[in-house]
Length: 134
Image (cartoon, rainbow, N blue to C red):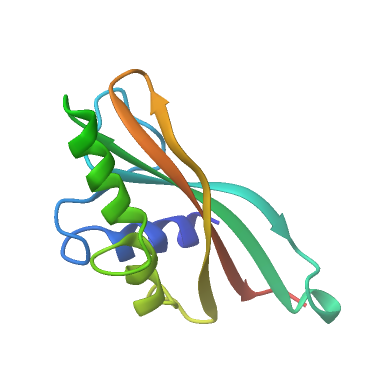
């Protein structure tokens, strides 16, 4: 799990998406914009004899600032399916630089969530399929 989390973080930060910072957990004073990959569920028996393991992650995407319109515009850019966005970047690097890994961005699971009154964010649902131990 930690290798996948690191792979997600490494695939998204500079130079892939200039200025984007990645964290393992939401820090008290994050640099914006940022992404935090949070494991949600896993399925260890996806294929016969545990041939595949599926991990679902929520990628929490946060933007900060004082102008909510600018923050929302930047958030939209980061979660859109095109341009220098998180989904587009992951679809360009579906293996995360790891062997036997495939990433799929399933969609947005929440949008315009306010965190600590300092930033707004969205959550992207990402599925990572890996080879199991069967």
